[in-house]
Image 1: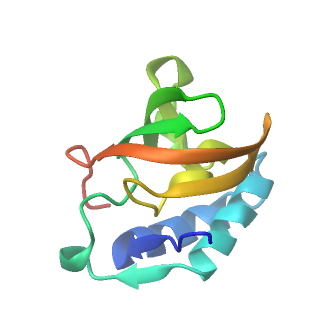
Image 2: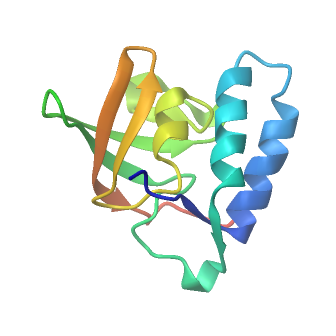
Length: 131
């Protein structure tokens, strides 16, 4: 069973605005996928949000379950993305796949390399700021 993503109200509204602004960009598919994830999401108060939920600016360790390969990334705004530094845009397929999920969740998602099962190993939200 696919887990349900959770967002705080602030992030939810910010991401909705970002989606609207990116409708005519090269990230249209990802913006639509993110919109679909927001449509089915649980919206929580900031003070009640689980600290292990992936948010904008979270540092995340994920594992491709099939090949047992781990990677560490930070989910950032499109303007701050830098793949060489592990900073992945919120509108990149990998970020859309895991945003709103929490440590120990497993998510099946279609990425450019095919359908992957991603396990969220660790989430560090020390860099998360209010948008």
